[in-house]
Amino acid sequence: MSDSLVLVERRGDGERRVAWLTLNRPKQLNALNDALMDELGAALRAMDADEGVGCIVVTGSEKAFAAGADISAMAKYEFMDVYKRDFITRNWETMRSVRKPVIAAVAGFALGGGCELAMMCDFIIAADSARFGQPEIKIGIIPGAGGTQRLPRAVGKSKTMDMVLTGRMMDAAEAERAGLVSRIVPADRLQAEALAAAEAICALSGPSVMMAKECVNRSFEAGLSDGLMYERRLFHSLFATQDQKEGMDAFLAKRKPSFRNA
Ligand code: HXC
Image (cartoon, rainbow, N blue to C red; front, top):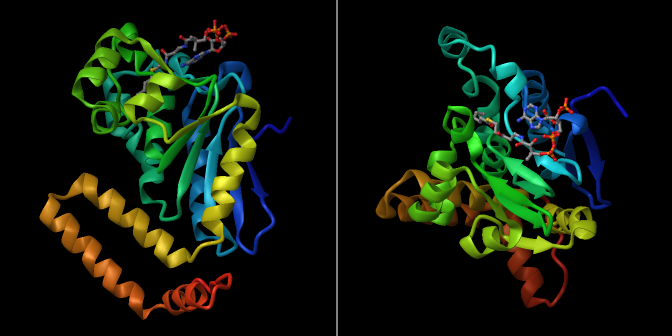
């Protein structure tokens, strides 16, 4: 096994390929330390900038997507350590600026910062073995990478309070019912299903995919009127692309579109 904390591969055989990022600290259940998050941030930036990549998948091992931020590292931190070097913001938040779609393919534990990392992705495909939780309260802290903000947006206040205040885990079925994950697949199909979803996205027009992501994300930041206006203007702007002409012409001619990402 490589020493890298994040393995970077390209998968799929379309013109634009899938960047496949595997968190690689399996013995520690992919506990997320600064070195790993620095590597993940660098890989995300590189794949986002690569014209040959159309979609990114972030995944872990069979046993754990990630069991949280690294408690053995955090145990020694003092307030001034985390404040001065802006713990979390500096590297974890790189995910927020990625413009290409990012799918989290989750098997096993996604706890604490691991659940938060999965929620930072655009959607979550869960293996039936997946377990989600925000157990920080059990070690004297609270979620710190967006859990108290993104979880209620996904599953509502009551379930979030239950998770955050008791630290209990949800299994994949509960997570799907609650709207945290988009679909559940058998654990041995997780990679294939995530790759198929990512390849389907790669085959679409890159600019429209990027704008669709921007619009959905806008709904989390803006009020309805501003969000609708944002969507409307981006929708209008797509009529300036070659891919809109091609997509619609191909539909009418009953042929497969050939997108140029322009
Ligand atoms: C450091 C961790 C870890 C973590 C597991 N390990 N989670 N190390 N940080 N978050 C290590 C264990 O110490 C152990 O190391 C090895 O991984 C295997 O774990 P076990 O506990 O032996 O496995 P198991 O009995 O199967 O239990 C799995 C588990 C448990 C239920 C997931 O490991 C667990 O409760 N982990 C902590 C979960 C957690 O509290 N996460 C939130 C962290 S705080 P050794 O050396 O003994 O083999 C957080 C803050 C986020 O995420 C806010 C900012 C980012």
